[in-house]
Image (cartoon, rainbow, N blue to C red; front, side, top):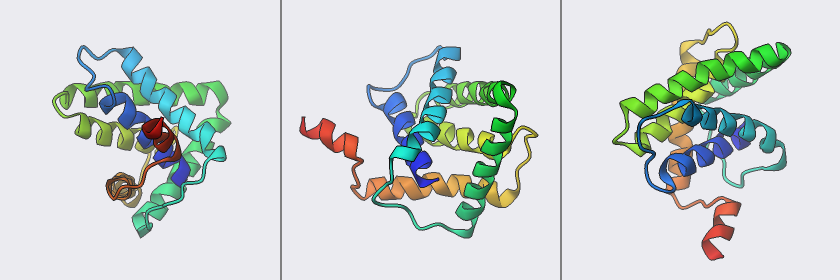
Length: 161
């Protein structure tokens, strides 16, 4: 799970803050880009192990278990499950982008968190409080790790090249 988290956060942060803030109007293409980041993080996580991983709290542990469970529940529904997840993430991402258009940092936090919450809640859209709290703690924990100067391998290569 840590690989999924950091890959997703890095992708969303690069998209929303890398070339300057995204400007409204926010369209389905913006939301689709977030869904693409989510699926990309899931697929690419098998090939990446972060060297630094934040210490998990009980809530983070619960959230990670719920995210895995939710992902499996969506996957068992095939294309219908993937479509349901995308239909949940896209409007939520657009709402967060619109609501926080003057704060790309807040957009990044909330879009990242909502993407993980959408997976964790599964197709039935149910989530316990500990997992919801854990998802926010996941963002805060990675923000702290990256804020301490940890640079992901592909960012080191880009910075030195």
